[in-house]
Length: 208
Length: 119
Image (cartoon, rainbow over all chains, first blue to last red):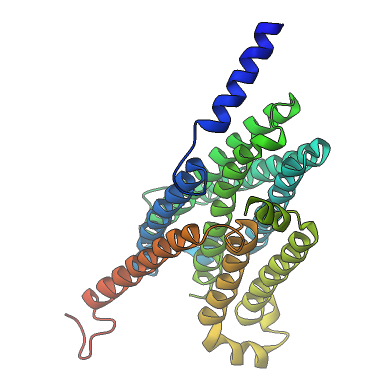
């Protein structure tokens, strides 16, 4: 027991000092922001590709034939709310309010699962309407862009679920709230990417 | 500095206000689409016709507002070190340049913007 306590103390000591940096900021936080910066360029290339191929497909199905704005609007609302939920969970983690953190974090994970499920259903539905990956320019650029975003959502959901598992076991005290903050930053980024994709892909393309 | 950030982060009321604003802006986006091209077009044809020329611009403006709210308040850029804001802004500027450059390049090759037709 004493050995375990000593090991935990040692781990906490390491956790507090292992990320020392000359900047007044934890280097893990700087790292996630640098990663987010690189992700901006990644999604910029995917969005550009989608836009330059827009309206260039010579055979259908076309966006107007298959898109369902209602379903995607529901998914968008869920993703926006999940950003609110995770920031409330972080608020709870920083204050040491475990119940608040667990409640909001659980809701965030549920939202992630719902959004990923919505996208899987959408892809399955489009495929059965005759839109394969290589059907036309629209399908290739659409599946690549939204598929990569969906993969980011799935990874984010998994990341938050592992933190939720730790939080249930009491391993996310206020001094380790940064672990949740870093995951939350990634989650918010996934949300802001969708804020761009939703109007550009779904709303603007429907007018053609 | 950390205390100041913590105090700022604890403002749950502000988070709720921003969630409402984000939801309202999304509803506006969908309403704009419905009025211009969707089911509401037949109900308000005059309004749809007057908004249609500005459809893309208004959508991009609404998206930019949503993006700004999430980045500033939910991602805490408003309260964190300025270095992080500059890091993000720098990436966004390059991203916008990449998008713009590719659209111009492909448009040019298709003769979409060069006077006199195809290149």
